[in-house]
Image (cartoon, rainbow, N blue to C red; front, side, top):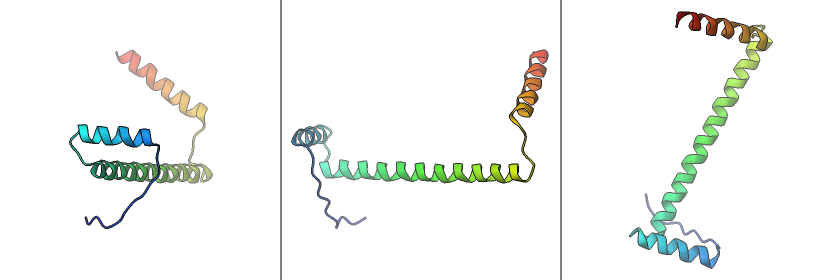
Length: 92
């Protein structure tokens, strides 16, 4: 990947000095550390967005199911799993 873009930012002098000291202590150029932090941030944001899209899809599928009359009430689900718990306890 070519490194042709320049990124300028403002930050507190103390943070800058601490960051540069830590990068030097890790024997790594500060620019490399910043690139890695940026990549991690991009990846994390993509994962969050993908999960949100996945979750939104699941919710829409559930809503469609409920509108079509295929859903069950909370009481029905609770009763079903209470019966399963009782059966599992009896088998144990």
